[in-house]
Amino acid sequence: MPEKDVVERARRDAEEGKSPSTQAGEFVREEFEHVREGKHGARSPQQAIAIGLSKARRAGIKLPAPKKARTSRRTRSQAQRDLAKGRSGKSKRTSARRSRATSRALRRESSRSASRSAISRQARRSAKRRGASSRRSAARRAARTRRRRR
Image (cartoon, rainbow, N blue to C red; front, side):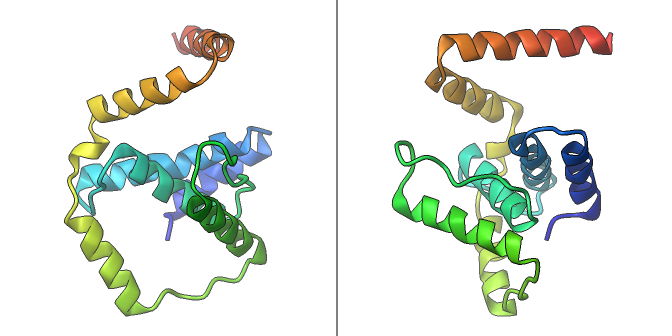
């Protein structure tokens, strides 16, 4: 269950007209925080991101399932299930046994996957998959944001 302030920040992003992926970023950030705090671990930064995106979809953020080219059928169908769960509004509680099994499995994983270097590696890897022009525009946006913050 995502924390209330995370849902609130995501809702604020939606009201400001920001993209669904930006709204979902709040949930991913929360997941990385959980790994850092030692609430649980993750096998890789990608797993932490996937958990965050799943929580976002279940919380009602209209983040579409990933495209066919990059992901397995299982991942896509899980994303579609999460979306449907988010749309329905009502959520059935996970059984205690299942919840406990999940959190135990995650607790066995490392917390290194949320380190600054691991996240940086993941960001660079995913940026390389994008085209040069999209990377350039992202860098310009980042520079503009940094300028505004000074």
